[in-house]
Amino acid sequence: SKTAVSYLDHLSLMPLSFPATYSVIKNLESVEVPFECDQNRVTSQASKGIKAAVQQLVDVQVPGFQWVRGISMEKIGKHFVELIPRSLSLQAKVNGDWRLKNALHVLTEVNSVNGGRRMT
Image (cartoon, rainbow, N blue to C red; front, side, top):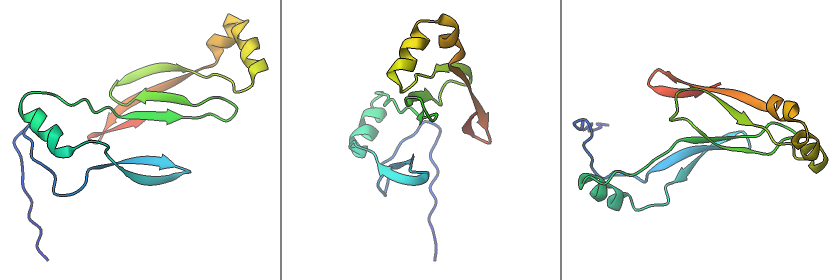
């Protein structure tokens, strides 16, 4: 079988010939989820100079703590994110001692690797 490959100039746009999806991890499996927008409308807006904001965000949960939501893959570098205990009694203890609150931060680092992003 033959496959046609088309190349676009940098920052040029054209409608996709297939449904646009993005990957999410659910229950330790990669799942393709369709975008909840009209792809043709986004393409026409972008061709008029209206930029569509697409962010790559990661949610992480450490056992015993609440979900840390929205860690941006766009911000290269090291960033601290706060861990909040799921237990209300532990939350009260942590909020009462600034040293515990400071200790419950995790260092995340986003790097550019082989054209993609890696978070550690």
